[in-house]
Length: 313
Picture: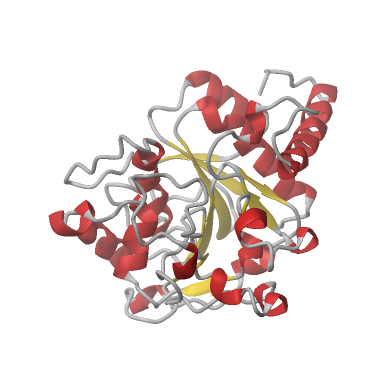
C-alpha cells in the first residue's frame, strides 16, 4: 500500500531484500558511488537502491544511471512542527532516513548512510531476527542498529549536557572488548539511542504510521536533538536489537573507545562529521581511516575510467 512517503510501492529491483541509501544532493554522491562499489566488491548478494528526493539534480541522476544503480523517488520528510537544526543543518535531511520503514514492497531493508564504506561482507544483516511486520511495533525487536556514541569528543557546545563518556553504551563494553566485537551493549545501555547511519528494518505500514504519529507530536519533536535517531530511541526505547560497533564503526571510535576498536573487525566504517574523506586529496588525509576510503575510491574510478565512465564523481 502506498502512502505519502512511499507513493509508488512497486519494487525497482527483483530482490525482496535490499540496501538503501538516501541522497538529496551531489555533495554525498561520491560517497554513495563508493559505498555501492564496496558492497559489490565484498560480494553482497543484494542491490543498493538510491532513495532520492526532488532536490537531487539531473547530473546526479545521470551518474546513477550510467552506473546502473537502481533508484527510487521518495518525498522529503519533515515533522509537522519545525525543529531548529541551525547548529547542525545536516539533521534536516535525517528525518527522511525513516522512509525505509514504509517500503512495504520489500521484506527487509537495511538503510546505510552514503558516508559509509563496507570493509567486509555483511549480508547476514538481511537474515537477523526482527519482529514480524504484523507486530506493529509492539515487540522487543522492532529494528536493529548500533548504538550512537554519546561522548561528544569534539565538545560541541550545543550537544546535550548528558552526552558524556560515562553515559555512552560503548564505554560499558571497555572491560570486555572481545564480546564487543560480536555483540552490542543492551539496547537500553547508556542513553539507549541508536545511531541512524545503519538501520535494519522489516517495513510495515502500521509501524511506519506509529513513527509518523510521533512526528506530529509537538512536545516530543522539540526534544529530539538528533532527528531520526532521537525519535527511534524514544519511541522504541529498549525494544530494538543492538548490533556491535563493527556494523557502524564511527570514525571517532578509535579515539574515544580505543579499548574495543579493532581495525580488522570493522565490517562497515561510518565517516561521521567533517571533513569527509572525499574532501581530502589522497596522500593528504587528516586521519588513517580516510586513506581506506580514498584507496577504494581510487580503485573505483580507475575501473570506471577503463569502462568509459569519467564524470568527476
